[in-house]
Amino acid sequence: MTQRESIDHDGLFKELIETFFWEFLDLFLPQVLDYVERGPVTFLYQEVFSSIGAEEKRIIDLLAQVQFRGQDSYFLFHIEPQSSVQADFEKRMFCYFGRLHEKYDLPIYPVVIFSYDSPQKEAESSYKVEFPDFQVLQFNFRAIQLNRLNWRDYLRQHNPVASALMAKMQIAKEDRPRVKVECLRMLATLQLDPARTEFISQFIDTYLRLEANEEQRFQTEIDTLELGEREAIMQTLTSWEERGWQKGEVSIVLRQLNRKFKQLSPEMETQIQSLEVDQLESLSEALLEFESLDDLNAWLQNLENS
Image (cartoon, rainbow, N blue to C red):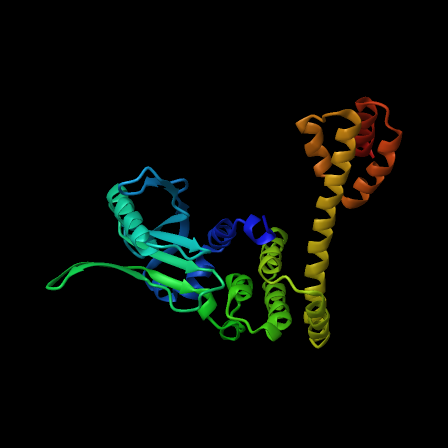
């Protein structure tokens, strides 16, 4: 299995949209903000529906309940990230619509975000049932097809979703290093909390991983920025790399301890996972002298008391 195949693409997009729901609407569906109450959003999870005429089951990717502005009534956003081309996808969206509408008896606003790299031809965004003399049905959904959007059109957006999704838009190969710089530059100016900054940083790196020669051009692009922007980007990258290093150190130390003492308790593993990088380095040296779990417990207790 390749690295790309092992990535939960739809899950990443779901987390992005769920975390930055209003920013997503502001970027791609600003007209909706004219009639929606911008307040708490209720996400409905694990809504499973069977396909018509089959035993297949499917979990709705993202279902959000929002309120009409100035009214006591609500409607649902059904947002479906789609990372690959699938036959009869439009029919599937219609089937979801029917089941959701029947279950909740609420208006449904269906949205699909197509994130595959190819093909670049315009994706279908409707499902029809018609006869030569009579149209029975035309079901439409909003289609956001990233590979047909130009990253340059989103450069001036002060929006975390734009910072992330520019990495999946239409990019010429020679522009890849610059686009990554622009994604990170925008992210640095947003001044999000560390957890959200890390998530978007990893999202960008997942979809815009540079080759060795591109990394050199990436650094050259950073060097052309103003000092403040350059420092902000480097701080973001350094913070992200340190967290990645910490996770790696945790993995190594836990593997060494489990090899030495067979199996640690979940509580002890949790305690070790919370250590800082310098503490993990000290533990990796100290564990060479441990003869039993009592020695490990004593070391951790001494750390808490220091």
